[in-house]
Length: 107
Image: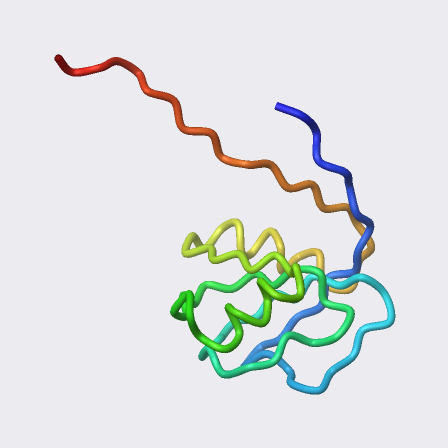
C-alpha cells in the first residue's frame, strides 16, 4: 500500500457542536463531540473527527466532501480520548485506506 503524505496540523476541540463561522489559520483537525448535520465546516479545517454519525446527505457531510475535508466517525471511546489528549498540539496525520480481501470463495 502506498504511503499517504503526512500533513502537519493542530488539533482543536469542540466540546459541543462544531463552531460555525470559525476560521483556523493553520491546517486544523477538529474533534467535535457533537455533530447534528446542519453545521458548516470551519475554514482551515482539514478533518473532522466525531462520535456522531450524521446522514451522508446532511449539510455537513456534503460540505466536507465538496471541501475535500476528511469527515471521520469513531464510536470507540479510547481512540477519541487519545485524540483529545493532543488538543492544541502540532502533530502529523497520515491516512490509510482500509483494504478488504476475499479469504476464500464459497462454491
